[in-house]
Length: 196
Image (cartoon, rainbow, N blue to C red):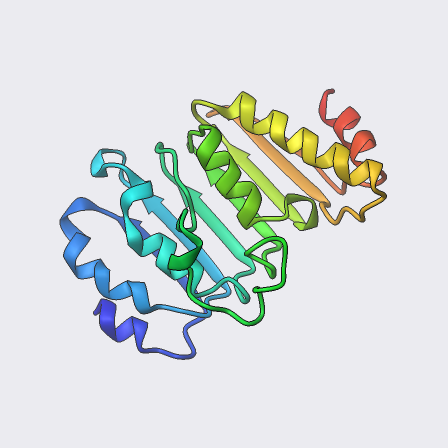
């Protein structure tokens, strides 16, 4: 079935759950490309998500088309291969600073971070260019991740770079959520609102 889906040229949206028992079957999904919407759930006991090529391959092959991305996992994860030579050649993104040039909505749930994975996220995604950004119960390393995002916002402000982010939602626990939107003005103004 995975190979059949991968052969569908008009496939635009996909929801995946990465389970250990499906490892061999899902390897056929590495050929899926040009998605517009991708939602991935990761079973905690599966293992190191960053070592699993299916997600990285799908995203790599959809770098110029992917508009919505949702990922749930309690692992640290690099969404694209660390080695640039492993990236699928894409003429639409080769000259861009960030890899996912079409992405406008991102939801991250339960994900943990370290310095390496944070750099992977910042390289792949222009967070200030997103329209909608949701953080749901992030795990270890979230403080460092937020510090890096604050640095990105400050850089945009100092260089007068346009910020497209209009809605920011942060769920810090299972029974508490904060949503900010639309966010207007400079990144520093948005940051000030978010502290309330």
